Image (cartoon, rainbow, N blue to C red; front, side):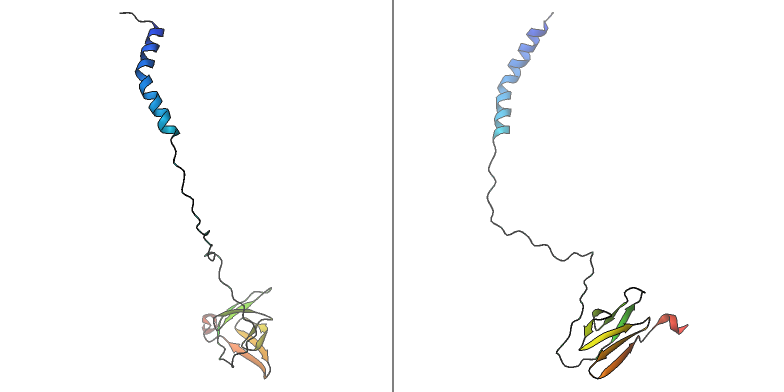
Length: 126
């Protein structure tokens, strides 16, 4: 039984023809997406950037100032006083930061200067 190629192609096309229309129809049927009027989501704080709050002048009654940490470098030393990060020139509790050393911070206010020392410095205990 010898068949020619054109005859074979006609036979295949007749077998596939009923399914070809269904495939085209299913691909062209699309439902529209529902319209939403939702507010765009606001991004929160970047978790990879540390939260820095610089203390400003306070009109609150005088509070106890505690030096918790000093981050000393030659260009811009900083310190943590009462959960606030402060720099030279910052204000906290009505006092102005005038100097930050390796283990201390000096503040200047209406009643004169105050020197805050770190309570525990492991390097100095040796």
